[in-house]
Length: 187
Image (cartoon, rainbow, N blue to C red; front, side, top):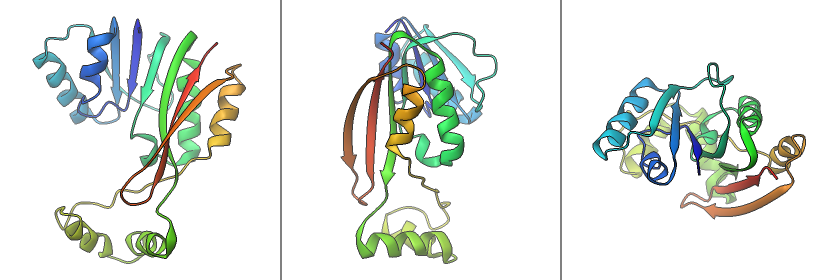
């Protein structure tokens, strides 16, 4: 890719790989601390083609377009009403013949155990803390809210922009959550 956007870059685990294959890379994250860590990781690897920006839903100050847009393990932490708006804004920044790779969950843990676990973690005080211990985390680690998206709605957002080429890759994690990687070509 010539110009790449890594939306929700976190500490830069994927950004350092994108920087190696892109002419220029813009890393965006909502957390200033994550951006600092990403900047440090890119600098340690000698990348000078990377810039950083604090993200917002409206992408203020970002006027450029990109031929590759990447978003991984971000949307599940964003309420879908906001998330669909963000996806819409991301696709508006995709250049002609560009490719977007957007990952999102469409279903949570299934079966009686998954439904009970979600109910307990969400509604019973301190039960998520006990699950933290079971999962090898610290007792006081906060509960991370998880949202699910409608694949049809995301495809509809892309089609409204004249984007009709899609590819999907799915994964199921160890808790039973089904996540998709949707690849959208702006052809």
